[in-house]
Length: 269
Length: 217
Image (cartoon, rainbow over all chains, first blue to last red; front, top):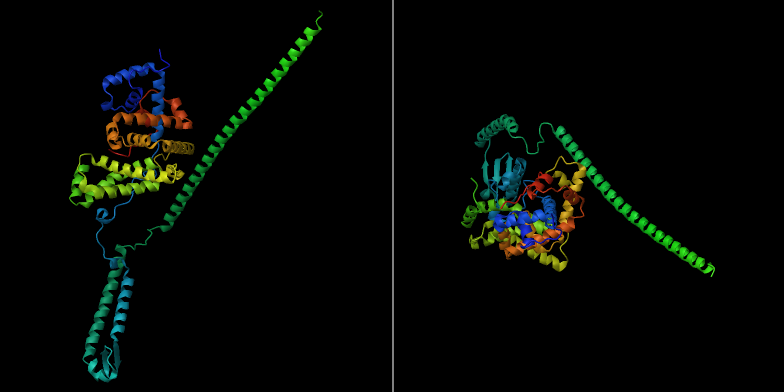
């Protein structure tokens, strides 16, 4: 037979919690057996334990946002603690080659401007002059090489030109292989169109699903509201019926009273 | 082989920053989850989580190893949460938790769920969040530590600086409040209707097959 009121001899709240979480250290076996025997006969405790189990089921479904993605990272500490393990790359290595070349040219230009470089090649020969000295001391300051006819630098210049040409040819031969080996960082793969299409389709699917979810939620809320309204209407109708019924009863009893009184008064003495 | 917390702590104390990074990676999710469930605000929970590790890093030379590293970390996080709630209370009551995005649920671990189930689950989660926000701080903390972090009664008592029996009382009172608050939600009614006599573990498996306790201890 089950009891309606709980008569557990021990501390009921403590026993329920210990039983619920099944922690042996806090609930020795004798105590457990005692409580389980009680539970078999006590409706109140059984209902409470069941209800708490349901609460625990509901609690289990709650997970914080952001913990759903496995690679979620909260952030890292500043300084050496969070030191990245990627190898050190100098900042200038990250720049594209054309930018490096442009920067180098700019540097040379600025340096030449500062040094007031003057290069002249005319009938007097090839002349390079630097510095801010006046034209009077030009002869002394200039690092000039003047000459007529077959100048000694001409052979050097031809050799230099040849070397530059051969270097350019060698670079041109190597360039296609290098380009094939290392695709540019902005490459979008062998079939970018297909990828873009897939992305668009994925986005559309996501939007449709979101729309469906919103709709379902709205429908659910409308249904809940409708049910609440129906309950309210039902209750109001019941109230009206009650009031009407009471009023009718009152009138009937008044009429009955009246008739009884009238009948009694008209009865022959 | 994975190093234990104690080994990583010892190495961190000798100046090995990488070991401390490993500790962060290991514990940032539980600490963030604890902060979020205690204060109910995602951004603030992230701040609390970061601050917890910063404080732990600064205080590492003073860590004597008398308690487990995780308990020490939990204590720092709980203190920060308490400060946060005190600050919030000065400006107003603890706000109800933010509504999660519905798409978060889609992306969650039930991809094959029907839309109706998803919406129902979302309502259930919102009901739990609201109910938890209504709990007094001590009861909420006790429930979070027990339900989501699997701490023993004694560990919770140590963290909350109270006797073991007080922990049980707080759990009982907290569960009673939640029971009242959640009794109106349709899912709870369904659970109650279908509740058998099996233990909580079976309930959990049946209702949330994908649910995992993400917080190790």
